[in-house]
Image (cartoon, rainbow, N blue to C red; front, side, top):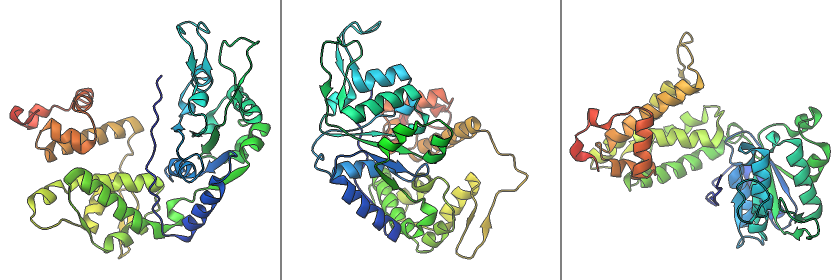
Length: 352
């Protein structure tokens, strides 16, 4: 599996006192070289915090890498992080430096460490203790290579509970818990919803339409009444869907489009989210409506998204791929996998 370096944006959008305090702590710990543990619910922006620590540190001009080790097997984790020598295992026809060596002097972000096996925890513990790596298959007579890499760990679970349950080794926990930053959920910092909404609307308006879109002030109050279980990621996804849904208004109007509460209400009702507007009107799904299983809901979303996307692009694959930030080849593959037939609704003359 090839892992590529992908840096999140360094834009940090906030207004609340909670995030101001967090940013102060980020700047303070960025100066030092010790490991950092980030704790917070899914979608709060732990990856953004990890990169901000790197960006504000003396390592800012060195490599930054996110390695999703929670999704890899133990064997692949070891070979990716520590590297291997030629002949170390079947298929190792050449030597390869691991991520620790390749990122020497920089920062590595390791998300969702709650899923790490005990053997990988031990290997990481050894690295944190001695700051050196030994490649798989390396001769015992060859000394380990010293590496200067800062590690930032993250989890969306209660790590103390994981220690009690035996899923996280006590010694590993104490080693990574030198500095712990807790990222608050969005429902605890509703003051950030307005600047975040402005940021995401500007981002997607520019990406989709290359224009500015106005936001009715009542939208902010409406969004602040939602509890945001998916946090900032959910807010971003909702805004992206809203802007896709108003595409016709943007293209057909000579005036700037104006986002209203109704635009968001339609999306929330379709998603089944519990939201109240500024008049405290509940927008709940009928309690008798069956909740779809995850795979079916995901498939339905993809079909709705890409059908809407093609409609907005008037069936033009090149334009649709630009809007969705996908390659034309990648878009065609997704359409085929989900049985979305472009030619059913659009003229072949529009397909490029």
